Length: 161
Image (cartoon, rainbow, N blue to C red):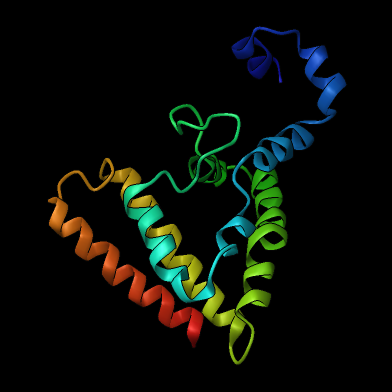
């Protein structure tokens, strides 16, 4: 908590007063990030295209506190949290409540939970790939378009069953 307080230029007691524990502070940070439920808004028929476009061309994990995506990305927060057992517990609870369960319910039908996990894995894997390859900068614009189109088709197939 002292490190966080020092980084933002406040007293650690102030953070404790407003957020309580480190877990509560971490949960507030996760809550400030784009909610996975937002991904399900819009026409179901173009879900794959919408998500693939966001992953390939956009900043899929922006936080409201940082709309440019430069300072804080939800995905990077999650990746950095893997090493902490306590943080991973919070991430897992949050991911189920905010993303996996609603996506499963939204998909509905046979094998909805399986299809939701497959779609999530594709989205997360591609988002990590984008981060690791500097926004797919090694690809030409035409290749990025084909990547988006293939990803869109795969995602839509998972959603439609």
